[in-house]
Image (cartoon, chains in turn green, orange):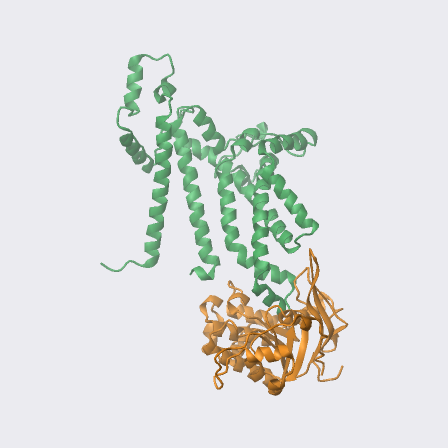
Length: 340
Length: 287
C-alpha cells in the first residue's frame, strides 16, 4: 500500500472529528426529545383519536422499537437527506429549514458585517488612544452592548425608529405589498431582489432588515471591539513595535502593518464565533421583529413537541458551527506563517 | 556644536509619573558622541536603556524626557515634531535591541521587514529594494541571502536574527547606531561573531556607536570610551584602554566581581553599594 499523503490524513481526521461531533449532538438532542414526558403520538393524532388509530401511529413512528434502534433508523434517514416530516407544518423538515434558514443567514451576515466594520476599528482606536475619550466611549458602548437585554433594546428601537421617527419599516421581512414578488434563488431577500433587479423590493426589504441587523450588529460590535482592544494592547507592548518605530515608520504603518497583522489570527476566531452565535438564530430578536428565521422555527417547534423539526434544526446549526470552526482553522494556517 | 559630533546631550532626564510621585529613570546626564564607539555600562535599572531610547524620543507614555539640549546632526530633537523625528529615526539613528525573537515581527518575512526600513526613507523600486536588502544580508555574512530574504523570523536562528536586525537597521544608512544589549540573548558561541560584524560595518561606514551592556569586559574590548551609569547618573567616564585605572568604587566593584581566568580567586568580591553614590553629581561625558 502506498503511503498516505499528510494532507489526506489531516483531512481524514478532520472529517472524523466533524462526524463524531455531529453524531454526538444528534444523539443528545434525540434522547432528550424521546425522554420528554410528552407523547409524540398524541402530538400527531390529537386527543380524541381512538385506541386503534393510536396504535397504528405508534407503530408507524417506530416507537415500539428500542431507543437505540430508533436512533439508528433516524441517523440512516438523515444520511439520505430525510429529516422526517414536521408535525406542526405538515411539510418535510428539510423544506421548512430551506425556507427559514436563509432569513437567519441574511440577518446574521448583515449583523456580523456591521459588528466587524465598526467594532474592529473602534477596538483598534481604543487601544491606540488608550485612556482617551474614545477609549472611554468604546468602553461605554461595549458595556451597554453586554448588559442591556436585547428584547428591551429591540422594543425601544422599534418604538423610536419605526413608531416615532418612521425611519425604518416595522416587523417582518418585507412589506405586504412586496411579498411574493421575487422568486427565491438563494432565499435571501436582499440577494434575490438584487439578482432579479427588483430595486423597489430591495429598498423595502432593506428598511425592514436594517433595524434588527443593527441591533445584532451592536451586540457583536460590543464583543468584537473589546476583544480587538485587548489583542491590540498586547501587541502594541511588543518589542517589534519599537523596532518598527525605530525604523521611522509612520504611526499608521506601525499600527496596521505591524500590530494589526499579528492580531488577525485571533480576530478571525472571535469573529467566527460571533457569527456562529448569530446564525444559531437569535430567538428574541426574531420574535420581536417577526423574523421568520431558524431560531424562531426551532423554538416554536420545541413548544409544539415537534421533535423532527427540532432535530433537523439542531443538525443544521451544529454543522454550521463545526464548519465555521474548520474554516477559521484554515484561515489560521493561511495567516500565521508559524503554523505551516 | 563641533562638526564631528553626531550627538550631543545636555542634562537629560527621563521621568515617569507614578502614583507616589515622579520616578526619575535618568537623572541629568550629559554626553556626546563622535564617530567613535561609546560604551554605556551599568546594572539593571541604571537607566542605560532609557538613555538610548530617550535619544530617539521613544520613551513609552506616560514617561517623558526633559533636557537642556539634545542635538542630533544639528537637529534639535527636543523640539522636533513627530514627523521630523520619523525622518531622523532609521535615517540618522537606529537601534538594535536585545532579543531578535521579540524584536522581529513574527508574521512578516525577513525581506519585507528589511525593505520596509529602506523604503521608509528612500524612494526606490521594489526590485532595487530587494537587491539592496539581499546585498545587505550578504554584508552581515548571511549565507544564501536570497533564500533568507523570504524566510520568516521563526525560521532563522538567534544569531542570524540579530544579524538580520543589524542589516535592517543599517540599510537606510544611519550615522548613529544604538545597540541595546545586542548579544545578551545569544549563545556565547555566536556573540563574538555578531559583534565583529557589527563592529566592522560601523567602522567601515564611519558611524558612531552607542553600545549598551552590562558586560564590562565586552565593552572594554569593543569600545573607545566607556561611561558607567548608576541610579540614572554617570558615575565615571574613561577611555576603554584605561578601565583598570578607574577610581570610582562602583566601577572598581564591578571589575572585581568579574572572574578572571588568568588570576583565579577563591571568592569573587560582592558589590557593596553605597547610598551616597546615588547623590553624587553626574559626571559629564561631553567631548
